[in-house]
Length: 280
Image (tube, rainbow, N blue to C red; front, side):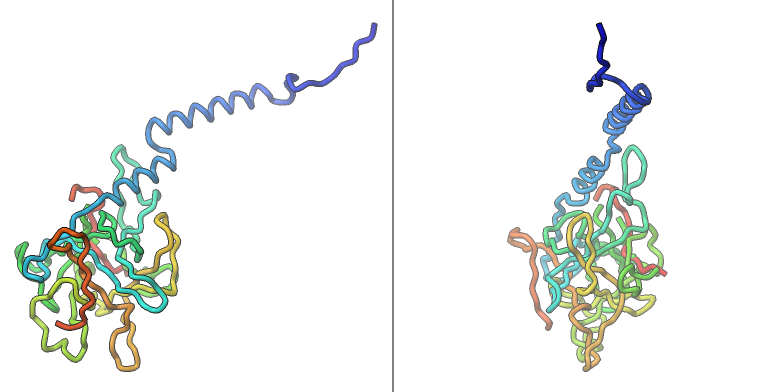
């Protein structure tokens, strides 16, 4: 009697033993990385859980800005962009490879569309000249912006203008000053207390360039569609700063109803401790 040799799926061919062992090793490595929290999805969840946690903005009892206040830097928008806020643009590559990951400097920033106060877009007005916490911030007075969770400070990736990023050091390149919105009244208001929730210019002390958001330079980040932030003064035909440079340092509504944003042109634990800084 003759037997016909046939092939069936159970027949093992080629380097079946090696392939089986490689599969077992891959599963073992996956389970080990999962246990240590090293999977990409776990890092993204960890990042978002920490950087998007809610932060309470300061309430201005006298209507002014003070050292130590927690504020959001909001650009009221323009024809080519929505209302946005300065936000930490961290991804999983920004996390340190330690048991308790933290954001490593330098860290990029962008203009995000979310206006919900969180660790990503809330900053602390910090003294650089010895002014005590709680004292009023004045026009033309130097200060730094520290992230609530640390401190904030090459050329920008898309526009090739001056970069603004987050650094750990609080040197002179991390110093900023606020100018009055109206250039014709700027000299008159120099040295006066700055009201909260009004349009102002935020100017870098070293380069004298104004903080700006670029509506024509879109960034696709972990948090969605955002805009590039740079330090560059945009002037119109009347030598006045354009809306790219218009910012509102927003505080909380005294009634507790959330963010207070008035468009007036006239008169926390160490998770990411860095300063708003200009890169060179």
